Image 1 (cartoon, helix red, strand yellow):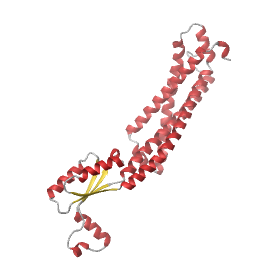
Image 2 (image 1 turned 120 degrees about the horizontal axis):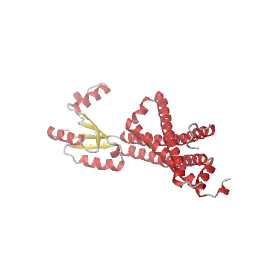
Image 3 (image 1 turned 45 degrees about the vertical axis):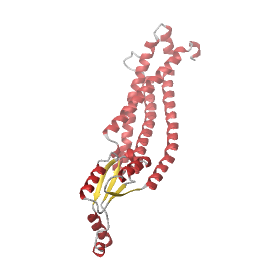
Image 4 (image 1 turned 135 degrees about the vertical axis):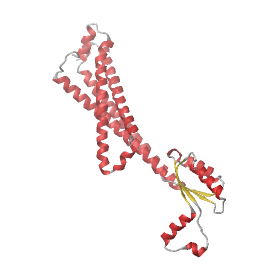
Length: 289
C-alpha cells in the first residue's frame, strides 16, 4: 500500500481529512498561545503605566543632584527616564494657568523631578516597594511618589481574569488534543487489516510502524505550517483595524510560534500514530471486525 506511486482516491481523501483535522487542532492551540502571549504582554504594559516620580531637593548641591540623576537613570529596575527641571516645569504650568505665579511668589516653588518607567519584571508591587526604598536613600532625593493603589488594583484585576481564562484554555487544549488523537486513530483504523496482515506474514513491528509514523510526521509538519499560515492571516486581518497589534509580534516571536506548532504537530502526529498502530498490533485478528 505504501509502495504505490499513485495513491488511490480513498487514500487522498484520508490524507486531506487528517491534515485538515490536525490543522484545525493546531490552529486552536496556536490561537490559545497567541492570546496568552498578548494577555501577558498587555498585562506587563499595563503595570508599567504605574510610573514612579522622583522629586529632588530644591536646595541640594548641583553635583549631588547630577549624581542622583545618574544613579536613578542606571538603576537596574528602570527602563527609561525623563528629567524635568523646575524652571521648565514652572513655564509649562504657567502656560496652562495663563498667569505667572513665579513673579508673585518671587521664587520657583517647584522641584526638579524625574519620571521613571520601570522594567516589566520590576513593575510589580513587591519589586517596586524595594526599588522605591532604594531610591529614597539616594542623596539629593526629597520624595519618591508611585501609584501603589493603582498598581494593586491592576494586579487584582489581572489575577481575577487569569485563572478562569487559564482554566478555559486548558479545557480547550485537552479537547484539541483529544480531537487530534481521534483523527489519527481513525486514519489508522481504516488500515487495521493491513497492519495485521503484515504482522501475520512475519514483518517486524518496527517495519510495520515505520511508514505509518513517517506519514504521521508528514501530517504534523504540513498541519503545523498550515496552522501558522492561518494565524498569520488572522493577525494580518486584525492589523487592518489595529496596526499596532503586530508590534508585539517580533520575528523572533513569530519564529518561535512556528517552531512550537511544527513541533507539536510532529509530536502528536508521531505519538498518536505509534500508539494507534501498537494497539492494533496487540489485538487478535478476530477482534478487528
